[in-house]
Image (cartoon, rainbow, N blue to C red; front, side):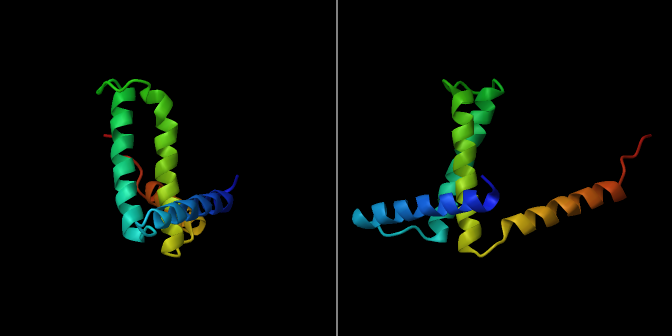
Length: 110
């Protein structure tokens, strides 16, 4: 699945959450809500990485790592849509900028 396909799937899932939350009387999530969810997912991801690296004890941490990475990606895809950001173009621009910066600033071998 390409980036646009991933984003479409993320938006479909976000719409399911909206319907679920509205039926429960909580209302649809705003971009602020998605951002707060993303921050929580990044925190969970950090704890899993620490566990995989032996710095925390979380059973089956390695097995949960992919799930948490996908949670983070989901939030990024939904936020990009909500703020009308073309992630494909921005990613290409960002990586080109990094590559240019590294090419223009080689390591100092003293």
